[in-house]
Length: 179
Image (cartoon, one colour):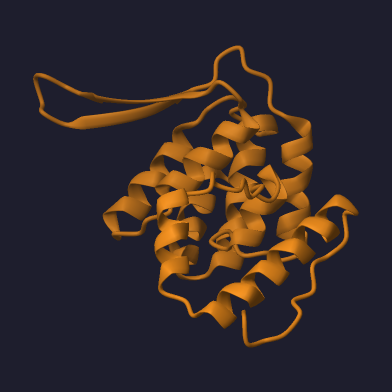
């Protein structure tokens, strides 16, 4: 398919995340290996189309494109004479990440929506949850609002959690009342 045909298909697919992912995959393939290899005009055009329709997919497009071409830059410039704003993506000298291209191809084949979390998790992995540091003041405030019986149950739960965490075992609560 030509870039203009793909751009039109992308524009039509904005309401359907699955078709959007398939079409975007084709656009990326055209940038990587197509007739006009290295030409990012089609990507800039689909971003403009999405923005014109009020669609919020721009950041995801840029993020995925940045994963394929690590180090790519996106520039927006205003022409001083005409007042028109032009955008461009610069990938000169950057080789595409084949692993990301393979993942995009698999996502398109599996019909995964480009708008969903599963799409981005496949590309960048699941975010790791980091436990935040204990807010002692907040913990004391919470505890001060509890009865003595509830505090004793909380104490049992904390002891069980410590014991199981040391053994790398999933924690089971002693009863539902304290949870």
